[in-house]
Structure formats: C-alpha cells, structure tokens
Image 1 (cartoon, protein in one colour):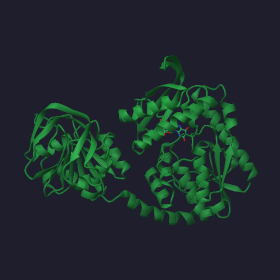
Image 2 (tube, protein in one colour; image 1 turned 30 degrees about the horizontal axis):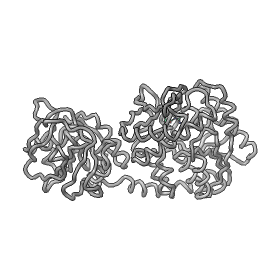
Image 3 (cartoon, protein in one colour; image 1 turned 120 degrees about the horizontal axis):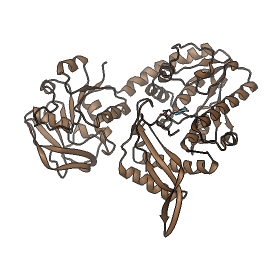
Image 4 (cartoon, helix red, strand yellow; image 1 turned 90 degrees about the vertical axis):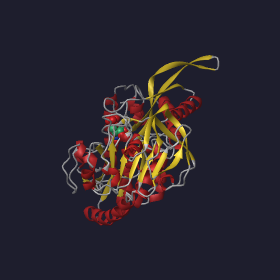
Length: 516
Ligand code: XMP
C-alpha cells in the first residue's frame, strides 16, 4: 500500500477517531501497535506517521514506547498528546506529572505562524485530556502554541518534520482539528490527495462507462428508482449522460420522507434535465401502515407497496427492458452476490426494491465495482452538488422506522420538524460531515415536564449520531455537549409537542443504527 499514513497506537480511546478524520479527508491510513519496529514500518513506506495518545506516563517503567529509530528516520511524524510526550522523552525533553489535569475544551493560543496551523486562527478551541505535560522541550525543538495550563501545547523540530500537539485534533471538540491533521498530512507529509487522484481516475471511468452503457442498452428504455440517496443519484446522472431520456426515473413520495427530500429531487430534475416521474403515494403508504406497530411488518408492507407501484408503472411502459440500480461494491459483498459486471435477469431478492422476476428486466449496475468514496468522487466529476454527495444514508422505509409504534400523519409531522432542527444544528456546528449518520427518533411515550407554571405531558425524542465505515458496525458519536444542548433547546422551544430530548449512546453491536 503506498500513499498512506501510519498511525502508531499507544492505546488511546481516540485512535479510531484519527482514522475516521483521515478517512473524511480522503486519506488512507493503517494502524499499527506501538510495538511495531521502525524497520517494518519503513518497509511499507508510509508518507507520514501519527503517534496516538495513550493512558501511560513515559517516565514509568513498562510504559508503551517506540524505538528511537522512528525519530532518526526521515518520515514526517506528528505526536498527539501522549504521542507528543513520547517524542519529547525520546529526544531528551522532560515530561512530568502536572499539578492539575487539563481536561476538556480549552483555549489554545498559537504563538508561531506555522504550516501545522495554516488557515486556522491565532486563538482556537481544542480538546485537552492529559495528566502529564512537557516541562522542558528537547534540544532543537521550538514551541508553537500554549494554553493557560500548558506552556508547550504544540512543538516542532527546528529542521526535521517532527511535530507534537498536546491536544487532540481528532475529536469533534477541537474546532480546527481536521484542518490541523490535513495540514500535517497534505502540506507537511506530502500525502497526495486521494480526491485529486480519484477525480482523474473517475474522469477515465466516465469515458469508459458512458459508451459501455450505450452499448449494453442500445435503443431500449431503462427504468431507474431514484431514491434520493448518493448512489441512486450518481447512477442516474451517469446513465442519463449515456442514454438521455431513454432513462426513465421514478421517485416515490412515500409520505415518509423528511422536509426537503422531495424538493431535492425536483431541483435535481431541473438541473440535470432528468426524466423523472414523481409518484405521490403518500396516502396509500399511510393507509397501509395504519395500526401497524411491528417493525418487520412495517418494512414488508412498504417493500410490497414499492413493488406494486413499479409493476404498475412498467405495465404502462412496455418498452422498458432494463432496471438501473445504484448497487456498489460493499452491497455486492454483503449479500454474497456473484461478481459479474454484465447485466443479468433480476431475482426478486437481489435488489433493493425487490422487483419481481416476472418483470423480466435486465439489471444495469454501473457502480458495481465502486466504493462509497469512489461514488462521491464520480459524482464530483459529474458536477453533482456536494450537499447531495455528502448526505447521510437514509433508509428505504424512511421515517416509518424512526417512529416507534404506529406511524401517523401527526407523528410524521412532529418528527420532520425535530429532525430538521437537529440536522441544521449539526451542520451549523460542523458536526454533520464528521459523522456517518445522524437522525432523530420519535418514541411512543410521553413524559412530564413544566411549561411556565403548568404541568406538561409531551413526546420524547431520541437523537442519534454514529461513526461508521460501512454501516455494518458503528460507534455512537461523542458529539460535544454544547451541540446537543443547542439541539435540545431548539427542539423543545420550536416543537411544542416535544417535552424531552435524549441522546442514544448505544454502539452497533449490540444496537443497530436505526431503532427498528
Ligand atoms: P442498521 O439499522 O441495520 O442500519 O444498523 C445500517 C445502515 O443501513 C440503513 N438501513 C437501510 N437502508 N433500506 C435501506 O436502504 C432499509 O430498509 C434500511 N434499514 C437500515 C441504515 O440507515 C444504516 O445506514
């Protein structure tokens, strides 16, 4: 693997956040235990090395440490928290227990204009969590920043590309954390941006795929279910470039959508000149879901409705011979499908919509070999708006599986307003793009509260945000309390039906991402 960043793990609870932050920057990383030898790591040729934080104290016997060879080599290094102390210790500086642990959101003052802090302000909020600190820098190191309690909150070697920060750039609370990690990775370590590489790879992909799709489809018509998610949008725009209006898209308004979901499709239709029929089936879906509380039944009913709508549509459009699907590589692996790039006959259990075999459509899956990040890069090359490409996944059954118990119009309306506020707060606070998925859930219970002098008895909503690579496993996101507080205050003041807001701190496993 070339063009990657090595993370040397000293046992920090935040190491996975370093990986996620790099991933969001489009940077590949690989994590090694701190017992890895420099020789072994050098052989793999990383562009840079990040030393994670850790629970130990460098001055204790048996603490986690690396060989000094790391610091003699010429691979750029960034030490974070304990990782910075390891550098200081190995290079002759002094690390001591501090009189008082520095913990939480802290003001950092940058004293020296430096590559590491490029495009960040002189004063910024960072997340601190350390009981030891560097009291004397090693020879040849210069201080870059300080906080009230920490004189050396960032440092660099005078001539070599060795850096250290006492704070945690990888956690949400560090305002410019991803910028700082990006500065190290791209500007200091010289990692070639995957985005740039991907864009040129994706331009080639478009030049290959467009004639290939034309070849396969000929003059036939292709049906595509436009769900509004990243994969279906990118697959649709790519296919439209190849066959124009012979791509017939259907967007089903199930009535289980969020505020703006339908408008997003209408705008895309305009911008990309897509041939989209918007079918409003909201009352049909709601009627079918009346009185249903069991999650699997909800899903089944919704799946069957989708099939019925598509069957009826196809009856009216006999010229349709292909079905376009935004299947990507992880979907193929997950469901153990046979890997083939040629279109085959649909099996009902094969595809997302569950369209039945009798329809005898051939499958067109132009994104089949791609990962999510490739799909986003492809979307960028196709000129699709970034807000569409960076949106979180949204499940097919929509809000119905985020309303626990019976789905009603009233509950949908409440949940829509709550979710809009929550997502807007996350976007305003710069958290949205850092998490895999975030949403709200309306619970089937009411709780007591006070409004003015009156007793209130209102709905409870749960907010959820998770970190994940692929949705298969997930960790609940430690988003800052201030952000949660803002969301809670706005929700309870702007949505009068809601009296209590809770945050879901369950990872997957044992939970799932969705509640139903
Ligand atoms: P769970 O809840 O199984 O979710 O941990 C994993 C990911 O899949 C999404 N999800 C769905 N997506 N149709 C979809 O298209 C569905 O029925 C469905 N159920 C869950 C979920 O939002 C998460 O990203």
